Each structure stands twice: as C-alpha cells, then as structure tokens.
Image (cartoon, rainbow, N blue to C red):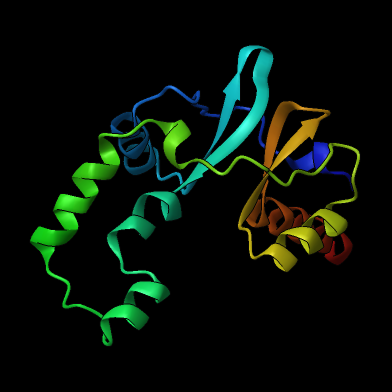
Amino acid sequence: MLVEDVMTTSLKTVNPDTPMSEVVTMMCLFRLSGIPVVEDDNKLVGMIAERDVLDPLFPTFEDMLDGGAAPAMDLGTALDKYNDVTAKKVSDLMTRNVITVSPDMQILKAAARMVGKRFRRIPVAVGDRLVGMLSLGDVHKALYREHAKKKL
C-alpha cells in the first residue's frame, strides 16, 4: 500500500508571513499539532508545530547550566512569553528544512521514517510541492483495514 492511498489531501496551510496569533488559533480550534508552511503553487517551505510555540516558554538546557537550577515557572511568566510568541510571524519560528515522504512510497517505509524521527505526521511532497500529509493514525487505520479484510 502506498502513501497516496491513505494520506490526507484536505489540508490547512499557512504562509511565512502569517501572524502566529492566527496559527495558534488554528492549532487550538482544529486540534492541529503541526501546519505546513507554503508559498505560491503549494511550494513547501517549512512546518510550524506546537513545539515551536511552546519551546520558547521554557528555559533551555544552557539556561539551566548558567543559572544552576531551573527557574521557578509561573503562569504569568509563561503568558508573557506566549504573548511574545504570538506577536511573531511564522517565518520567525518555523522549521525550514522539512523532511518529507513521496506519494509513491510504501506506507511502512514512510512510517519507519516517521518513527525514526519521532514524528506523528509528515508532509507528502512531489519535489517541493505539498500534496498531502501522512499521520501515524493514517498508517494504523490502513493496517487495521487490511487486518479486518483478512479476518472476513
């Protein structure tokens, strides 16, 4: 079974100039943990993920080494940092070198790539053009369907 047989093609996307305030709204309203970043003609130029939103709220390993122990976190400080993140544009935070799979790749090979990189979803591209997204859930559902067919 190929990626194109199970991938999602109805996608929410953003562009590099999209305000992060829009992105976090989309993530929360549509329960998206990651959104492809595209330019004209669906050219994939990056990904923006919840991790990109939330990582700036927490101290880095280097911060902890410099300061000894991790500073106490409070909701007010986290909200201030969150406000800073939402004031940015996607291009300020997105991952630029995106790992993709192709539509003609076997789903288990794509899943192995995802598991190896600890991804729950991965963009599907032909060249640099976004054509879909594949999630571990898509792979699992495909395996379940095949399993159910053999049981009948």
